[in-house]
Length: 372
Image 1 (cartoon, rainbow, N blue to C red):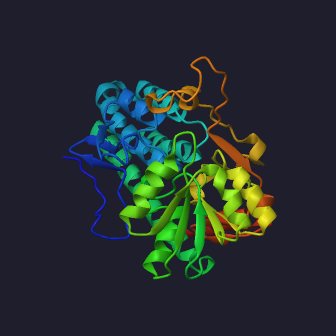
Image 2 (tube, helix red, strand yellow; image 1 turned 90 degrees about the vertical axis):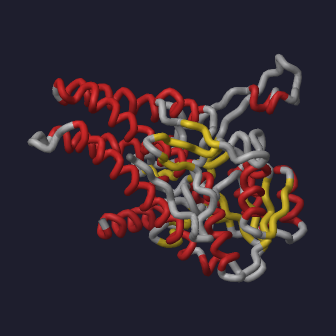
Image 3 (cartoon, helix red, strand yellow; image 1 turned 120 degrees about the horizontal axis):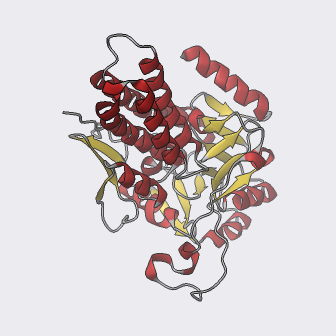
């Protein structure tokens, strides 16, 4: 009987966005928050794809982990069906499933990273041959990889928060955008993890929360998480940030990231770039928090990051409440790219990286390789 659930008795761990219960992958349906905490069963592969495409689950680290667990369940099914006849067809079917998963959300690189970890581990084991290569052992390996990824992600979240402690002064007024807490980051949080650690340290942070149009992840999810954790927070419309900065009411900005290029350019939820520009004008530190799994060293700069464009109905007809004429033309990129020159520091599991990012990112990966 396969079960996996993070022990949330630790008060620092937020609402864990998924669990494996008796070989079922249950994810919190973030579309229903904050009104209700409901589970979505993503065990069947097509339902797994839907859960990612339709943002039942969202946030780069969580997407990657849910995909890893879902693919592990699919490995179990494929191994039983195809492996007895030899590895070739099994591996072919596995790669087909992996490619379909990676196509669901093209910008968030954690998805590609975690799927590839499962696929590469299973493939190497199968191709090694030997008496131990059977359906049970292949399945067990896939689940072990998913569990290791989950544990490593939670550990990296907490290390990021530790590294960022000196960045958050007592009583800091912090602006954050979109949602980068436990729901998005697999248990603790990236940007919200830094804020949560400050609260646990007794620093009494005060958080301004962008609503984050058009899907309102800030209003629905970040406010839900901060209020649940008892952290002082105030919701604002996205277009209020400049006014607050001009009034001297923001001390620093912290966001998450969906992909970071080798030069430190950051893709994150649409609107992040505008905040970075405003922060630069007003002399406000702008930080990004993301694990090393969010970095993509294969891309030289942010211009190479693929940007997902979502259905224009998210703008025209959000939640069945007509916001524009039904046949209106609309433009709906899900992400924008913030150039590294506007970023004060990138908080990762190896420390707070500073410019020159080409150098500091390379050093961080060398440290990670040495720890492996």
